Each structure stands twice: as structure tokens, then as C-alpha cells.
Image 1 (cartoon, helix red, strand yellow):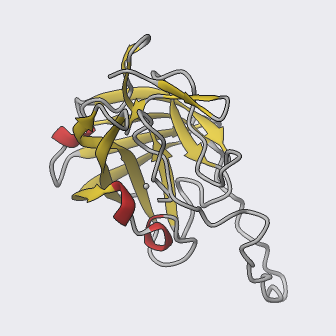
Image 2: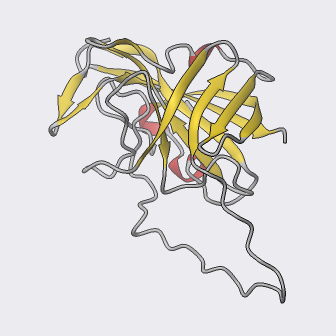
Length: 206
């Protein structure tokens, strides 16, 4: 699908996890509505550690993701763009991880990975086939330190772009999960954007 420039940022047709934060501009399938902004969302300070206890080490950042037989791509950290939406990698073969949220392997919250469906110039995107996954399919995430984490797909949703539940998809609390996001549905040539997002939720199996 064609990609367009919006506010100086080139965006493309995109993807999951997979998560409306994801109300992206035309062509960028995993774009969000206003995200929980890193500088404005209060984060509770950790309570005092028990005597002799040390805080668990944070997992390393994600470096690569494989989703069954439908996707395998490198992962890069992304933040927010000038509109307050989750940024998306310009290279459609690359998946973005929302670095202001939980990391894959964290003990709670939703780690969000977003990828493109396609691009008029670059072609097929990393999450082009995300909508083909099924419950039970494996998702593997390799961290920057070589650690491998296993997940299993639980739910696949197709959500209108203007109805994505950002609070749920970008939650920093609750059970640990991986959220994959991309574009889906029909392509609206008038707005040059896909009409839906595909949102895949996977749970850890480690």
C-alpha cells in the first residue's frame, strides 16, 4: 500500500503486536491515539525493599521477534512522535518496541511491538501476515543479551482505528503479556489509511 508523509514524518501501512495509542496516520498500521506519555503519566515510586533483598534486574531490551511462521524481524526501540503517538520505524522490515512501556520479560504490564503491513516504495512489511496468526501459535522474543523468551498467542482482535483501547494495550500493570499491533481491514484510498488495526495478545510460557 502507498505510504504518505504527514508532518514531515513518512508513515507507511503497518501493523499487532501485537498495540491507540495505535491510531496511526495514513499507511502506518500500528499508529496509536494519544499514548500514555512517558513524561506525563505518573509512575508509582517503588516501595522500600525488604532487608537484604535486591530489586530484580530489568530484562534486556528486545532485539528480534519471531511469530510462528508468519513473521521474523529485528526490533528497535521507539518512543513517541510529535503528535504524541507511538513512533514507527521507517524501515518496514523492522518492528518497533515502545520503550516507555514494559519490556518483554517484565513481570507485569503490556510490552508493545508494532510493525508495518506494507509500503508503496519498500514493499511488504514485517507484520504483513500478522492477521493470519491463530490462538496457540508461538511467539519468540530474543533479547539484546541473547536471552530467548517464549509466548503463546491468546487473542486476535480487529479494531477500528478510532476505537483502540489505549489504556489496555499500553497498560503498565496487570499480568505480563506481549501486544503486537499492525494495520488491517480495507485500505481507504481517500484517507490513504487502513481502516482497522490488528491487535494480537500473547502470554508468556516461561
